[in-house]
Amino acid sequence: MRHEFPNEWFRFIQPSDQTATSQIMQLELKQERFPFQLRGKAITINDVILFLKLKNGFNYDESVSPLLLSLGIDNTTTDNTTPAMTFKITSSPVKELPFARLSGDSSIIGSGIDTPWKLEVKENDLRGNPTTTSWWQTVTIDSVDHKRLNPKAIEDIWVICDYSAR
Image 1: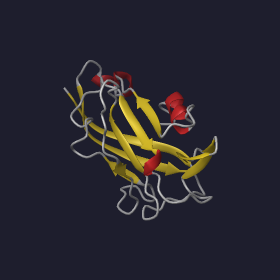
Image 2 (image 1 turned 30 degrees about the horizontal axis):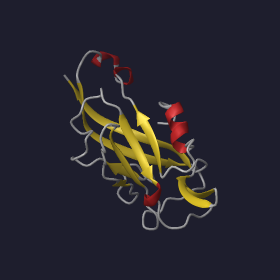
Image 3 (image 1 turned 45 degrees about the horizontal axis):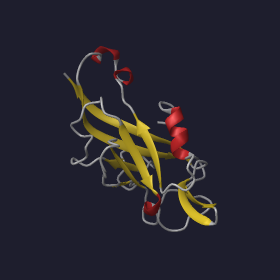
Image 4 (image 1 turned 30 degrees about the vertical axis):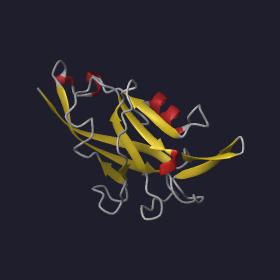
């Protein structure tokens, strides 16, 4: 996502509201992001897998502090709370990359690409105490500690979509 959505990525990893209780990335998948042969066809999302790519020297230990992240339809007019997914490394299809798969009850599964998505990491879901090799960190703003993703640790988050077109 870092290269496909650079502005959104920067706002996600370095939020302007330092006191916010979550980090949010809004994504718009458009026809241009899919193969040219599919232009004009209805695209339906069947499955989504996310991978967390850490920079060298940083560790991910799901037993100590797993990443919980939610991904759903971005509907700002209602409280569209999407259950958080836990990134796991033990059963990852890509060696040493933590991953998460959307559950079948996600608002994205079965949807088209005409609705924006929202990826969110909530401060309260970042558990434990970070170390110098952690993928998340504690920052102090106005004498209040906030938990954030560590921009020095996270290289990228890959979103892999299985889709169909008609």
